[in-house]
Amino acid sequence: HSHPAVPMNYSIEAVGETVQVRAGRFENCVRVKGVAALRLFADPVVGWKDMALTTTEWYCPGVGLVKLARGEPAESTFLSGGTLTMELVDWH
Image 1 (cartoon, one colour):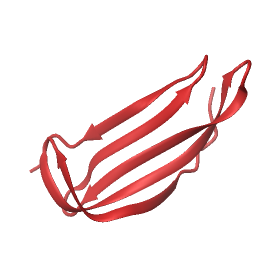
Image 2 (spheres, helix red, strand yellow):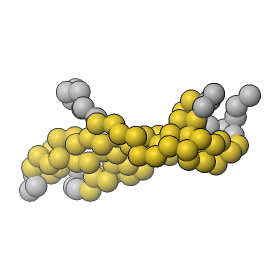
Image 3 (cartoon, one colour):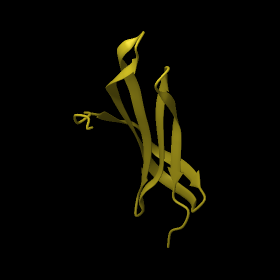
Image 4 (tube, one colour):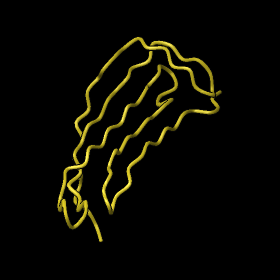
């Protein structure tokens, strides 16, 4: 089983942000938000439904990606959504 590509639209939400993660404190970061809709079969009653998919990413000078938060708030008989957060834990 496969799913067609899911186009995600990205936009810069903020610049000059400070981000605190386990690897430390980073300044002058850019926050980027991605938004997409995933068409999935929710359940036999609801049928096919567009499920929201969002990512928020923080990129910092000299380091790159330091934090990513992804949300998939799907809730139906067949689907259970949730969130995933990843952050940089070490950097030299």
